[in-house]
Image (cartoon, rainbow, N blue to C red):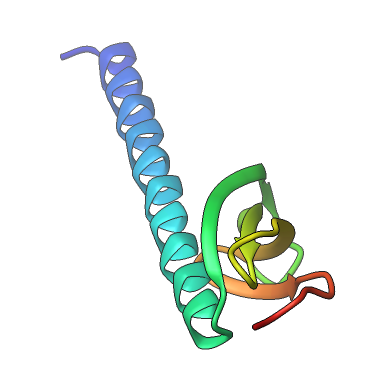
Length: 101
């Protein structure tokens, strides 16, 4: 195995690791928003990632992600909330005023 092949292999392994890391962050986001909606008696309609980038926003170098989720308070309406994560840690959550039963 030459040095070039070794470097290529290491780069591919790093890319694969980051792919699984981002996937793990998305799963943590889904778990968080599901729990958030359940705790606040809301119906979760959808979840999507808005942005992901590498950042030092809240400490060491890690993935910074913004997510949007749609929820309903009564079942007849639809609202959009958002939250930010650094790594697997939720930094902030925003929900607009909504109707409840």
